[in-house]
Amino acid sequence: MALKSPMDLLTQELKEIYSAERQLSRAIPKLVKTVQSQRLREMLERRREQGGTLIEAIDEALEEIGTTKSRPKNPAMEGLLEDVNEHVDEIKDEAMLDAALLASIQKIEHYCIAAWGTAKSMGNLLGQEKVVEAMERALEEGERYDEEMTQLAETEVNQAMLGEGEQGKVAGEQEVEEEEEEASEEGGGKEEGGSRQKGRARRKTVA
Image 1 (cartoon, rainbow, N blue to C red):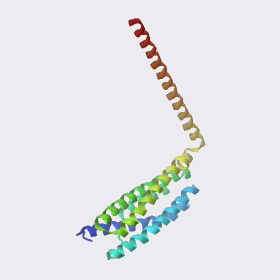
Image 2 (tube, one colour):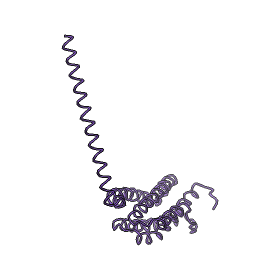
Image 3 (cartoon, rainbow, N blue to C red):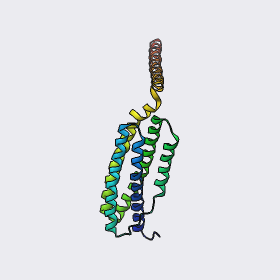
């Protein structure tokens, strides 16, 4: 479709978002069966539900705009999902696969957040209230989802990837670093205190 007006551009953005959500929705059930983390499975299911709600909202917005119903496949999402499928095929360690898939889903979410923000700005410019409302809701949920995925990665999934032996090694290295930092700070305090004492001594001599 030739883009001849700002409304055409907004329509194209909405169709790309619609396609991206449909593609992700179809991919998630396979990922749910693949991952080992129960919490990650729940997060994936939640993302699919959010996508379904967004698809309905975009349908309503496009109907109000009066555009055609064609939904060309989103090439950006297709590429992101190909990356996910490569991880599934190539990574045999289950814990490592969970970490890789979580990272891939966050990349997808970041792409979606950028697309939603663009559509919201255009919707604001063109006075399309339904578009703005749908994108604002998607952005709020998406940013919260991204934060929760980061927390899940840091507190569970990435730690599980290391294994108990590696976790202990990393924890030990962190303890050594903290002890060295504390020692450095204490040494600096002593040197500073010594300098103050020398300064006082010099002042007494001068007096």
